[in-house]
Amino acid sequence: MPLCIRNPSTECWWSFLKRSNHTASYFMNRFLRIFMHAWMAIFCVIGGFVGYTIFSVPDVSYLKNVTPDTTAFMQHRLLEADIAGDTLDLKRSLVAFADVPKVVRRAVVVAEDASFWVHEGVDWHEVEEAINQNREEGKKLRGASTITQQTAKNLFLSPKRSFLRKAREFLITKELEYTLSKSRILELYLNSIEFGRGIFGIRSASLHYFSKEPDEMSLFELSRLVAIIPKPLTLSPVEPSRELRWRSRIVLRRLHKYNFVSNKDYYAAREEFTEFFKEL
Image (cartoon, rainbow, N blue to C red):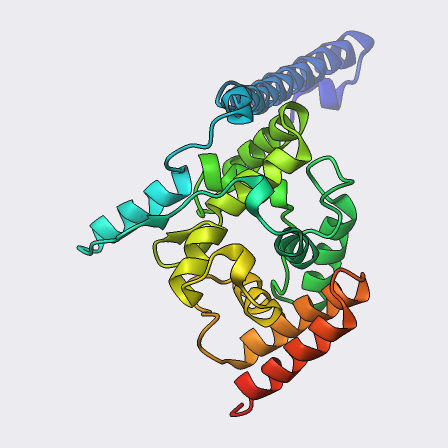
């Protein structure tokens, strides 16, 4: 047994305490160094993320007067087809905002982003609603992307999902809202949205599926076309399905609810609706 334990003098206990304090100080210093290194690493990661997202946001001012001939989303689809050893023939025919019938614009807005004209790029209420519903059901049932967010994705990004991509989408969305008018954002959206394999833009879609210009489509044809926007690669406006029936009915009802169509046109579309889906 150590002498200081058998004969606990003041000097002995003082020496023991000094050694204990030295050990405690050593471990405290080690902990502080590790803690500081961890925070420095976190800071570097956050700084890198912020730098990546900020400095990779494109200048969107040219979009005030120019509609790009191609988009990042279109290029992504071409790359997918090339990797699969396939050939993708892109169909895209631009249309000016003034040449898009008001009912077409309204159908797209009520179907995809009812608060488009009043929010600032992100509909936080819809985000909260989507999170709550998806959590309650235990799976993703609905999204919350606004028309501006979808425009940002179509023009500059890809369908791949990641935190960084979503962060870039958010920043580009805010830049679009700050730089462009709502009408211009909607015009870009209508000319870039995907409507099927290789089909981009509302005019290309109406010509492809119905051999009609956008202003020549019937209300029922329009409702079916707008209904496929959330799932353009799995739904077709000319192929009856239960999901198409459900989605197109929602579009028709909302247009009628907000008095965007007359009773006469609405009930005529309902008759076409019943006939088209009679086999389901």
